[in-house]
Image 1 (tube, rainbow, N blue to C red):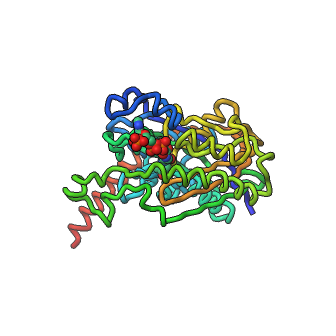
Image 2 (image 1 turned 45 degrees about the vertical axis):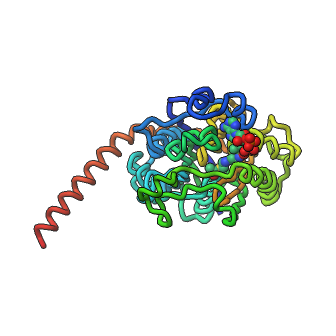
Length: 367
Ligand code: ACO
């Protein structure tokens, strides 16, 4: 049975930064309150012409560059997102077209902030089963579009960004060692974006009632998160036959510094084993775990051979954890340049549209 190794990683955040002081000009809050209660100092916010696919393409091309893998060699693309560009088509298909992943299947996965763990596990299991060899897993968000900038309970928390992993099959042991996924829909109403779906299709009244904005019962979500983070970590470690003594790092979902601290206490682990960057990005939902992992690699913290647990929670309610042995980049003799595929991907996409237009025109003439 092949193993699923993480051989590439990349992240991208939009340039504009929104500080706590900036938010304090919009709602009744302060830098001090936000820092003390959440650990967040600033977050990145997408420009008007940036979407989850825009951020995801940048992160994905970086991940493919590290893996030294051409987009045309991808078999599968999974985009975990809580802020998809459309209900359909899937954001993953837009990414597939823009990077030129000509033979990849592509779909979105909706499990809120646990989405990246769910998606990585799905890709890893597809590799383990032998049905595919190369997968791209992305977490990408522009949740700022669904934040009510007049609601101080939520608008202080979220930021935009994307992170991506490339997973590849290999006969060498390592890579994804175990994963657990959980859900509890009885808590579905604690964190919702109700408007625009088929229960509350967009109407003047849904907009008037603010249903197109995120709603969150912060206190309940906080209690839930502190309950599940440590437990899921231990479950995943147990499945991998490891204990907290065997791992170098925990890469938690970056929602609130206090939630991470509570998990550390539960696990009796020092905070310096936890990768934390919530201060600079806020909660980027599905993107938060890969962004934290990429930063840890780039700072020389997460190294080849290290064992780590990724752990997250989110709306649904969902939660999950994954234990990995970090593979690192595989040395290559010949370099592929995934970014160069971008031009050909655009050309291909344009030509496919022209062909579709001509085919439509000719078939109408035949009728
Ligand atoms: N600035 C100033 N005061 C505030 C603010 C603010 N931004 N927000 C709330 N307050 C006030 C409240 O009104 C309340 O005042 P009161 O005591 O007079 O009523 C007081 O501060 C305390 O409010 P709490 O809600 O108890 O504050 P808490 O310490 O719980 O922090 C927070 C709120 C930060 C939202 C916290 O509950 C939290 O982090 N929850 C988890 C959120 C989370 O992780 N969400 C993401 C899930 S992942 C996903 O799927 C998207």
